[in-house]
Length: 67
Image (spheres, one colour):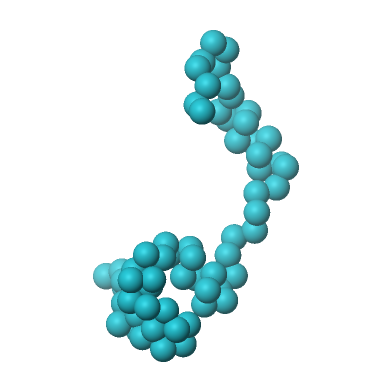
């Protein structure tokens, strides 16, 4: 069985250690919480990975802008 997150411990850390208000804690994304707790995140995407993705998912001619 896969273990889930220990929400009581995370909430306690958010409120007591980080000094967050409850609504501030619950408004965070998991990535933001990890960053605030000092956990190392993933490295930014490099040029090689960007080119790999561009080759795998090329833009189509005549496709409307996504903006």
